[in-house]
Length: 297
Image (cartoon, rainbow, N blue to C red):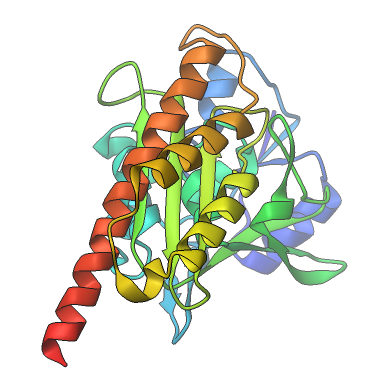
């Protein structure tokens, strides 16, 4: 196994173009586990740790450009207001040591359905910035990024440079079920984001299908129910029947398997419970924000 250590982003792209099978490594929290258990034995490892740009972020007027190697700890400490769903997801990642090393780029590159960042990125409607030496930069909508079990839309000569995430315009939540409270792969996970500016809702589900997914039928149902009931304007409590139907549609969106962490039926049930709870939490937060703004007016 050869170890490539580019000193700049340009050198990294050139190395990836010359060795398309090279496996990028930054935090190494996914890659090294697979290598240590002999699940993969790449011909080349492409070390990205010398490229400081990947550990930087930029907060714009409408969105955050998050470098692929920004550690989860930095997201938790510095971007909680702008990216609340992703900050909550970052809290659930393994241990402090792993959160200090791992970043969103690694989750995306591995594309495991159990990756903790995926539900939050789906709910927020993120875009993945990738680049190759030959074709330059392109943005991949998160909905198009996951193509199969641990497969993504990257071309062989492309590397992930950053993730673009719109700044939250409404409450976001994240929930995860695991067999213990830390250092655990998700049995299933659920992310929810309210987007009052467009009066829409987005979801993200992890570890309950071959890829991270959205519950699109549930989103469409809830969008219609909130609109028809005037909930965005009147700020009323969402009725139990609406919450129940939303939860059932989220469960129905799943296509899980039985494995050592949980059964398929349990995963469907747990996703429904998380969907109902996160909807309650996010909507209560939205109602609280409306009451505060009305009081100030």
